[in-house]
Length: 248
Image (cartoon, rainbow, N blue to C red):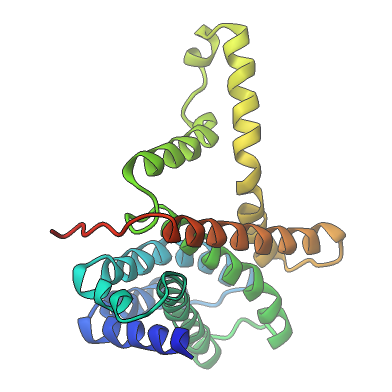
């Protein structure tokens, strides 16, 4: 009950601060730009699959901003456990994004429903999208000043950049590298890119909604496992470090 009260308090503070105006404007703008013309269900989930991670970046950063201030640390001094405090921020951000997604889906349902989009198809496409929202929110929570110190945040960001390095390390630069260095780089890219596969395949699964193979079920399990791992690591790190008053 304390966790639920803290989540509700964070949501209320988020609404009172006016930060939710960005989500409302983004929602209405997305519908006006992309969803006013006739469309298919594949197009709907393709746009949603790109829109929700981008908005999650803002929403989670804003919620973390509410938690990472001296006034919020008073809650911890009043007996709220650190795990509950961090989970309250995470659940509040996920609740906001879920509300945005449901409102956007309702607009499409009432004003411009794709002819091939049924309730069952919507549920199949929504599941991997919501898991991707949770994945990105948990990753941002882990990289926030509340959880990891600056050194560890830079280290994790460096690993993520190395996983995506194939997009900007290539051509002449790759040719000039020694063979051993190229092999080592490919090995690191393959190793570090593995955890990113469930999120990218989750986007594809939302678009196709093809659950006929064991790969689809395995990817949902992988998304869930990765979400639990990132969130568990964040909670563990937060309980093991001293609070830093970044605004002082």
